[in-house]
Structure formats: C-alpha cells, structure tokens
Length: 532
Image 1: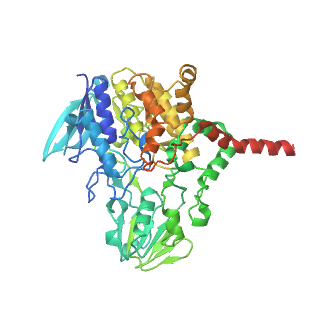
Image 2: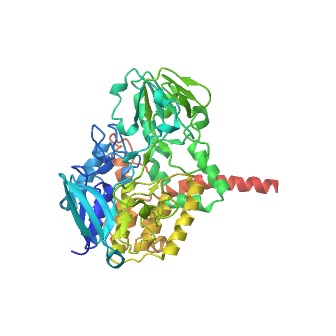
C-alpha cells in the first residue's frame, strides 16, 4: 500500500473515494460518524446530530441510468426513479461488491484536521478522531472531505419579525419525517425547493390547508419528460449542452423558458420565477400543479411578519390559525473540524479549484468531494472528482499554478452568477464540468475519434443521454463494459415500465430531437429574411 488517506464520511462520495484510493494503490481509512454507510440516503425515523436527514417518502430526482457508479449499473428490475430504500440497497451492494466496508471506522467522529508542522515538506495532516469517548491522533498523507452539505440546517428565524411570539409550532424540514402528525392541521411551508414542494404535496392529502410561501418562485418540472421518458435521459445530452452554449443568449433563454412552461403556465399558478432565464435547479414534483388545481395547496409570496396565530404576506393577505410552520430553507455547509480559511481563502468566499482543491495550499493533499452542485447526479460527479484527486495525491496529475487556479475560480464565479444567480453553493453546468474534470485524467470521451472508429457508439454518446458510463469509456480507469452499457441503456430504461408489452419498445430518435430543437431558429431566420 502507498500513502495513507483519511476520508471523512461514508456516503456516496466517501465510498467513491475509498474505491478510487484502492485503484491508485493508496491506503484509505474512512471515518463515519454514524453506524452505517449511505450518508444522505440512510433513512432514520429521527434527525441525528451531524448527519443528513431525509423524510420517509423521498424518491430520487435523477433516473437510475444517470446516477449510477460508472462501472456498476443498477439491476434491471430497479425502477427508473427510486425510493430511498432502493438506492440505499444499491449503495450497500456496491460497497460489498467492491470490498469497501473493511476500510470504514464506524461511530467515529472527526474532531480536528490540521496541518502537521512538517506540512511544507510532507503535505501531511494530523487527524483527531473520537470514538467511545476516547480521542486518537493519526498522521495522514492526504485528506478527502466527503461529509456533504445537507447536515447543518439554515433556519433564518431572525428574518421573520414576530416569529418569537408565534404560538404555533415551527420546525426545519430536516426534522420532518411524515404527514401523520399534521392530519387536519393548517400548515405553512416556507421555501419552494424540492423538500418544500414534496412536503407540501404530501401534507395536502391529510392537512386541512397547506400554503407554500416563496420569495422568488421556481420552475417546476415533472420527472416524466417528452414522450414519457425520464427527464434527464432526454435533457442531459451533449448535443443539447452544445446548443445551449452555442446559441445566442436571447435564443437560448427563449427556448429554456418555453420548455419550462410546456407542462403548465407557471404564472397562472403563482410559481413563475422572478428571473426565469437563470438555470437554477428546478423543482421536480409530479403532483404540485394538480394539488394547486384541487385547492389543497396555495402559493403565496414572502412572509412579511408573524402574529400570534397568523402569517402576513408581502401582498397583504393573511393565513390565519396556523398550527405549524415548516422551514424548507435549505442548509449551510460547514466543516467544524477544519479551519475556515482553508476552504474560504478569500473574502469569506468558497475558493476551490473545480470545486475540489483549495488553490493556495502549499501541497495539494486535500480534496473536497461532492460539494459541487449541478443539474446532474451526485454519484458520477463524486466518482470522477475522486479519480482526479487520488491522481493528484500520487503525483500522476499536476495542478496548475496558484494564479492559474485563482483565475479559473474567478471565471467560474462570473459564469455562475450569469447562469445561476447569487448563491452560496458551487453550481455549474453538468456536462461542461464533467468534461473539464475528465480532461485532467484523460477520461473525456473523444467524440470525433468515436465518429471515425465507432459511429454507432458516437451517435449514442453525442445525441443520447450523457450517462456515467461515458466517463469510464476510455483512459485510466476504463471499464470494458462501458460500450455495451451505453448501447443498452434505453433497453434497461423501458424494460422496467413495460410490464404489459403490447408492441415493440420505443426509444427517442436523435435526429427527430435535433429537428425539434432547431425548428425555432429556422423559423426566426425565415421571419428576419421576410422583413429584411
């Protein structure tokens, strides 16, 4: 075994990191605070300190073909969108098949990660852990932080005047587990993210009345996309990504807003985003428009103030006799075991090269895995980040200079503001980001070469869904089964829904999609030529 690597957290990012360390001949030790793997996806019937928390009814928003480990497809009989229990089953199977559990120390809390006195020479870290009341200090050659960003709830009570005198109950969505306690109640949900929408919809079947309060609105998408296919299998493609970046911004924005409004007109439901052209992550909820139509959910603007029993909204309307307020207001990221200046090295902003490496570190022996957010799945993102990180640790890959990394961070900050608006999270375009990271390790698919050597595969890679298998197709870490997995991905997608087969299975046709996408620019050009 080679260098010793400390991995903090045994969720999907931690498991990916253990596996990648082993692939690169490193010696991983993973510290997990709880008694099990899975991180966010390990359900508990109560919120546990220091751990992510989900509610019983959570399903994935990414489909199975888009969110697998790149060399480990889901079983054929798994549904396209999974209940958290099915995903946890997959995660456990992956860990067992890859023999990862032996490298995890459970019920072990990391309390401190500090540079060793010899860091300038060795790049080593002093990691202090606590188990059963006993503290232990261990020296590691590198550290991978995989503790996620859904642990510390953002509960902005100071932003709501009068909340201190409100006589009802209030809680953060982190503490919500199910609807039974809210039967017949009047509930206000603050926040229009995925959690807020899920909770509001679920409560609307039992509560007397549910109102969602939103500051800025949001696009709401169905998991079921064109012709009934999973949304990400149709939308997250290299060709669509190319068009989005190549078309003039006014055309790209128009197409985006038109597509987001295809299912229903958001302005008629009070959901229209204040800035509809921003590519913020939409809300995925198949029931919300229906519940609004049925009158069991209503949407209101921000809360101006609370009274003893009511909420007054910015438009002057009042929701009276509230029993419970649920704050679905997201999370603050925090690494309490680490000096803040390492992650926030400038102006209290997160400054990480490609969302992974602290750029001003004298030795590149720390990596943050799974912090970046995109309109793509976490598992393949974490896998690719970890593959790059371990190659940096072993000096197989060399990072750019500090100035080059800081320039790249500044450029990405500007793009983030343009595409996603102001937020604390590191948001990015999925395919662009994955290709950038893959390029550093030689794993980016070479599309022109594929068209020359394997046209069938090239068509699927470019026009089809950008599934994780593409990033184990060539280069280091290549998986021999990647080509077959890509060519059969639609078979696995439709197989699980074709429980009553009455005709041949259907799949999207790339050139039909191309014609649909290009129809607007062609019409626009014809109009311009007519008038000029």
